[in-house]
Picture 1 (cartoon, rainbow, N blue to C red):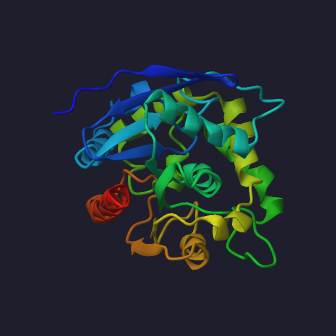
Picture 2: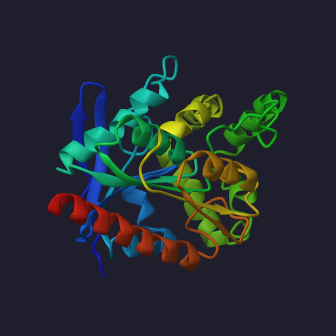
Picture 3: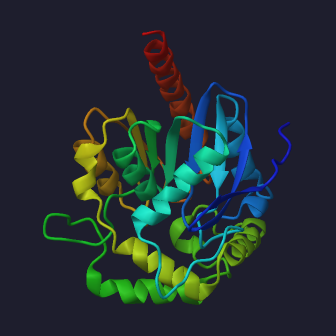
Amino acid sequence: MLNIPETRYARSPEGCVAYQVFGQGPLDLVFIPSWVSNLDVMWEEPALAHFLRRLALFSRVICFDKRGGGVSDTVSLDALPTLEQWSDDVRTVMQAAESRQAALLGLGAGGQMAMLFAASHPDLASALILVNSSARRLRAVDYPWGLPAERLPERLERIEALWGTGGNLDYIAPGAAGDARFRSWYARFERLSMGPRAAHAIVAAGWESDLRSVLPAIRVPTLIMHRTGDRYFRVEQGRYLAERIKGSTYVELAGEDHLFYMGETDAMLAEFVPQADRIYEKLTHSLRG
């Protein structure tokens, strides 16, 4: 059984980023969660802890709380970092963990940070794994799967009003929403990730992001997985990524839970191991060459 790892701080001019390192595998893996994160609380949920421990069987996992969330430094809600500035948190924790190159696992909204970092720093990213993610979240003439812009204020108000109550599970994890124990834990997880006003501001900034132009610049081995019934990021958004990231592998999974660690996770985890093996073989070959 893996002990709960120590939380440390990586320091940069932009602020302190809390991180953990665990696992002994040959591959470094940077775990980039959505905005709801807290390193010290995530281990309390058995399903999430199980997922993390499975990752540690084949990799050295580097987890972190983005600045503005969890136990990392706060950010100004009146002048939020850009996505590029937030993405630099990845490099900050990699340097602190003495990782020269790592695979990036972007989950939900964390996928945008992972995509941008992989495109901008191909020397630091050995691979990219995206789960229930999206390049863009608002609808456009050439992107009909996003949320209509006129509905965004209502969506943000609902997220803020339900923040810290467990009510957001009805949308992002309907399969687990009726579990009273999990609902209570998740409500606490939200509260200890950030406050309602911060959630409104940070989630709103994410909804304005558009990384479609970045996708052709991603040249690392990429695995994309998406649940077919995800209502938060529709499956068409995952298919869009697969069509525009050259050479990517795309896997659709059954289920409707946007939260990656809820629902049927064994099929998802089973896809990671072959990908990790391919990445490790490629890195070993490049080192020999």
